[in-house]
Amino acid sequence: MDIQTTEVARNPETDDLIETNKQKQQEDEAKESPENRDEEEDELRSQLLSDIGELPLTPPSATQLNFVSYFITDFTKSGHDQYIYRHANGLCVIGLAPTHIAFKDEGGITNIDFNVGKSDRSVLKVSGKRKKNAMRSESNTALCKVSTANDSYIVRCCVKGSLLEVNERLIMQPQLLNSSADREGYIAIIMPRPADWTKNKESLITMEEYKEKKGVSL
Image (cartoon, rainbow, N blue to C red; front, top):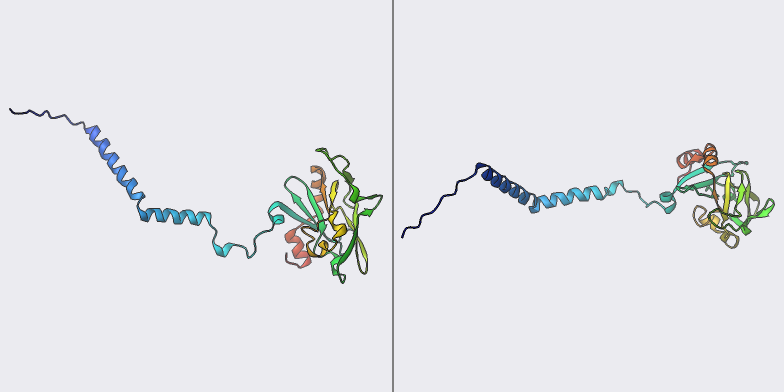
């Protein structure tokens, strides 16, 4: 018995769609070839990784990453150079710049005294979000007195604001001022009001300006 087969009519649009899908599949397979994957990985690597020739010789310090560095030179007296490191939250860390006159004395700094002016800054105890008991200071308010074998020097706030804390560790370890004045040897932390900071900033210089003015490299 003969079996009759029925020929299904072909739809041109369906044929075009099938052909398009085949071409797309072939293109996708081509993209996933080992050669293309290697090219994509190389391109991604070049975007994520820096050229080794462009990397700094030494990695940036935590201070450089988290703070903007400002300086004030010859503040009230010649050679009284200090730094102000400002955090994004507004806090300012105050300390002695590398060119401060005290570091030029033989043996460096040997003592620090926070009992200056009318009160001892080291007994300052600030608490709460409102920074209760914080001492209001002017830019020329004395923070402490540092002494060397030959002389003594008054260190000042440099910015107008609320004195939140002083580095009490320096009382027992004044040598930190000589070895790491820009890190563990910081002197105080001050919070200026935005308006006060804007005004104080006019008297400060940037790190690049400081290096050029003093002829130093940091």
